[in-house]
Amino acid sequence: MTVLPDDGFSLAAEFPHATHEQWQHLVAGVLRKSGREVSAETAEDALSTALEDGLRARPLYTARDAAPPTGLPGFAPFVRGGRAEGQTAGGWDVRQPHSVPDSAAVLSDLENGVTSLWLSLGEHTDFPVSALPAALDGVYLDLAPIVLQAGAESAAAAAQLLRLHDEAGIAPAAARGNLGGDPLGHEARTGSAYDATPLYELAGRCAADRPGLRAMTVDALPYHEAGASTAQELGCSLATGVAYLRALTSSGLTVQQALAQLEFRYAASADQFLTIAKFRAARRLWGRVAEACGAARHGAQLQHAVTSPVMMTRRDPWVNMLRGTVATLAAGVGGADAVTVLPFDQELGLTDAFARRIARNTSTILIEESHLARVIDPAGGSWYVERLTDELARAAWDFFQEIERAGGQAAALRSGMVRERLAENWAARSRNLAKRREPVTGVSEFPFLGEEPVVREPAPPAPSGGLPRVRRDEAFEALRARSDAHLAATGARPRVFLAALGPAASHTARLTFAANLFQAGGIEPVTEGDFGASGTRTVCLCSSDEVYAQEAESVARQLRAAGAQQVFLAGRPGTYAGVDTYVFAGCDAADVLSATLDRMGVSR
Image (tube, rainbow, N blue to C red):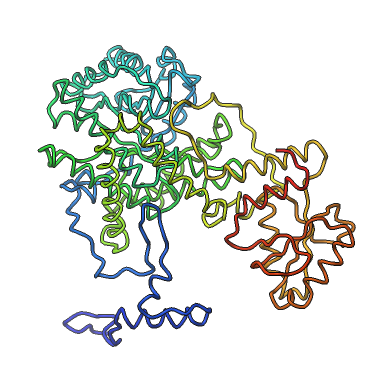
């Protein structure tokens, strides 16, 4: 048996110390081998990744990147958690959404792992407020918190729920959930305002004798769904929360009571580290607001995470399960109090029982089998996460201050300021999506043209009239829809012949690239046989630069003679005679594919 020395056992004791500068020098050497001439000082910047809001992710973080102290869970500034015990007692609240009054589905969820219900009812839904008693028939309201979202009918829905509590004999102190008042969120979605005075009165009642029931929600999803960056989403939520604090205190509540009436709802995306940092930064920001209001000890933010609707796709929707899993993991690690996993078929219509089961089981597996909730703030101390949290919080605070200078959230919404700023961000992101610099698996990357469509009953139209609702897949979805219509009308999809030049070692990489690219636009690649039998007059040359130099022009000439009307070349733009268009990594794929469908006569 080996006896350890008294001073312990250090695995790195015999290794020489390496400096950051030595590492940069090695990176520069690797980059030079790939054809990129950079100095050691700029090598690290060359590997950095630009994020939204002017942030950058560097390839390496060290102790010199340490962020300001983050404290401990349950204490200001609440970066590491709003509660001292975190989620260690039993994991986060598994919150399932329902938008139809189906008591059987509600009970099935509660019997199989769901711990609270999020009910969307009232206008713009198939769930009238009058149906609330039937939907909650058989539900133990003292055990299952109910969260309402009823828009302009929030006061009426809240009255129904409180009446159900009284009829069930639930003591006021035992009532839990959220009545869902969110006038600014409703205005952001619909463009119309409603009188929130009854909600502020309800908040007073909750503060007086229902400590487990909150009256107001700060829903940041309307801004996320309108194309907001992460900092913009946080900034809008801060401005909304501050507006509600002002209204609640004006109605007679103390600052401490007003803080206890708010719950914040944020989107959780498949960008794992950014989502972790978002929830940590949100708590820090709200803690700062509470501090400015003289109630620093009461600044813990109650957070409801919802997997991002923007990231959900209509094509290959099964991949949404994977996106939802990563987003849920990130929200849990980030310290969200409640997590809603949207069913994978969310964008296709009314979800089915299978999709709801997979959604709720996502949280169950992460809590019960992956033990994700055993450690409070497991990302805390990561130099990358801490630095990203700090930088994101600063960017969000800047946007919040911009909104405040514009007169507050209501004024910024009504003036168009919020719409304009979000549109600017989405335009920049859309360019990255179109160029596939932000890939969407199953849509812009690795699409499957032969997939069987997933069909669901249509859902009611989403609220409209306010901020737009965007989706990452929208540009390519429009192209695929054109291809589907062409298939239905003619019996065949538009096609492109991929002409492989030279040996397999020369053409395989670009042949694969081209096939992937054209399928993203619903164009079927033909790789077998000769051009004459392909059934198309569009062709793409695929090979290496060396083979192109020898054969591209002569092959293009032969294809033209054989009837080719459009000749593509997979590779960086050159001057080859007979080639019309070059397709390459970073080209505007959506624009190229749309123009190609136009030339093929595929109607819009």
